[in-house]
Amino acid sequence: MTATLTDTHKPQAGSLPLEGVTVVSLEHAVAAPFATRHLADLGARVIKIERPGVGDFARAYDHRVDGMASYFVWANRSKESLTLDVKQPEAQEILHKLLAKADVMVQNLAPGAAARLGLSYEALSPANPGLIVCDISGYGEGGPYTEKKAYDLLIQSESGFLSTTGTPEEQAKAGISIADIAAGMYAYTNILGALIGRGRTGRGRRIEVAMIDAMVELMGFPMYYAYKGQEPPRRCGASHATIYPYGPFLAGDGRTVMMGLQNEREWAVFCDKVLGDSGIAADARFASNAQRVANRDPLRAVIEQAFAGSSAEEVLGKLDAAGIANASVNTMSDIWAHPQLQARKRWTTVDSPVGPLPALQPPGMGGDHPARMDPVPALGAHTDAILDELGYGGRIAELHARKVV
Image 1 (cartoon, rainbow, N blue to C red):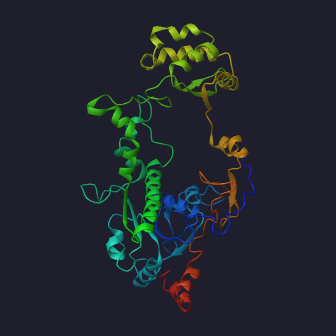
Image 2 (image 1 turned 30 degrees about the horizontal axis):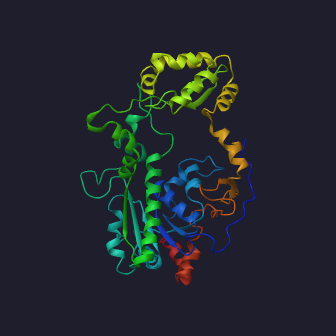
């Protein structure tokens, strides 16, 4: 089942906060494209530099969206694609002309590659003192890991994230590129802060975002939970590691219900109204959250026995009636048709080389304040227009022929 699309109106000129801001991005994969797409959502002009003939390698990750890659469609709408072979001097000249008037440069090239191309903040700021340069890497500069290759799953592992996810028997990765997303979001928010700072001082600055920094920041709770060598949170599958009952439980129809209790009042209500036995709340094994966590297996058996005579839908109804937090365990198909997203008109469309595609308004935007939702670009779709803008109009064919662009 597909999303019900809404006719969300386009933002009016001047209504988006980053209109007039130009971002040049040497980006690939997820982290940098995720950051710059959010800047584009807010109205920034994002010029995506891609390799001629190949482009961002995320374009070829899969072909699930009418022939386009799912990652690329998600992270690259509202951008302009300019192909440049940045190893050629004339391509570097074109790039530096762009950067001389840009507000922000973002890059997540291999460690040291941007500096070798003369694209460090130190090299660029004399010609453009207001330029903000955001460097995204796996481990950041300095230290023994600077040159180490870093992919999402590797950072999930290195940051300790994998030690907290999965079952007691086996670790499990996140089902999304959480390390890339974390780095991209911190790049995005730091760029917004730097733009505000520049408005006060007139000067840009360098931002360095390491994926390891972003992921370890997200690990704050388990790190402090294991403070001074204490035992870390146990891996509990889809259940909460330190609160119980808080997680998935089987109903009588074989479907799974997700629910969570946060305090003793809710526990007493749950026993009385949902389990139908207020005496369970007084059972010494379950008398506090610490006891319930320690005795989660027998408690799960009690709960699932009580649920065995009801369907998942009926259990959810009982939980709602008792004021107990709960959720369906949805699939991707369920999300495309989620009634809450439909009712709040979160779906709109973006154009693409394969035609209109459904897209969600980004969080915090939509309704009377829609995001910019321009097309997902074909490789090099804006190359000629940008070259003409920079004064290369008479040389465009030659630059193509010599594979500069």
